[in-house]
Image (cartoon, rainbow, N blue to C red; front, top):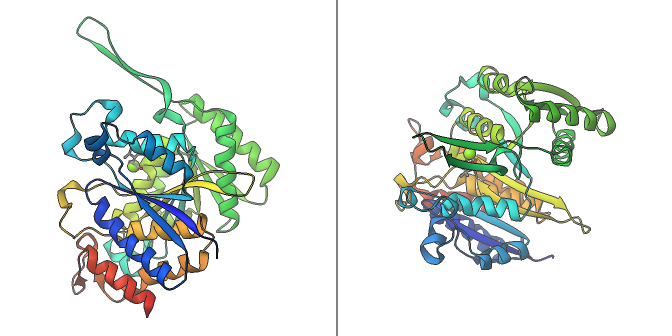
Length: 366
Ligand code: IPM
Ligand code: MG
């Protein structure tokens, strides 16, 4: 069996607690011969800043580049509110995305039937929901230059962020979206603001061309990003794959996640281009943040991180069968009534982080 190297970057806040549950799954998979995964752990975010004065060190970046895949917990917290902007915890995550060229961020928003009542939307709107948001991750306003605040000298300042996209960046993310749609519902919504933004005009033009040239068998709908936000609340099941830029993707994925019941449920995969051996650089992380308010109390929901590990098995280690089983175990423990505090409902069985890990392991073994 192929063996893999997985770098674990638990990060800050609840990151280490939820990542510990993934370590247990790795151990189980190794012991049972389901997989051969060697893990190493390192620092990122505020934890790395405290140790090295950087949100991610060069040495850690080297390990990340060499690993077959990286898993990240979460970064940030009020403790680091005062650190210089380029050393803030989020800068570590952004450097990983940028330097590993992880341009394609896959954010599935799936509503587990057992949790349909935990959504802020009505059950009939979300039961069975299965959306894939494909967010461009290495371009746009996150990285465009200039990005600065200038003192105008008259008591005024001017802040500038730059939204910039080139054709190739839109082409490659569009291809990822169309390829995924072919394996799902065969429908892509491309969201931009071409009514106000030049990047939106180019986005629309390039996606249209790629569709015409390479994917005319997939259904394509263009949608303005603000309308997309509204439609996600009005009738989310109309969507299959949504492809959009870095900033709209950030916002729309948080919005879509709430339709599923809890931000604590959603995994993500950030993928680079395929190399000559068909391998991609990849980083897997939960969509939720570091939740410093509940850190260290063993009450955080580990499901998003465990589901991110399942995505890692599927996309990086070619162990789709094992990924299916882990996702099945998550669905099973929810059916059995296990709930962490964030998804707790009347009559269900409230458990902590470790106990949720116990339940998922038991479901896998059973
Ligand atoms: C996300 C987060 C990040 C982002 C932050 C932590 C930099 O919100 O992954 O969605 O804005 O991309
Ligand atoms: Mg976000």
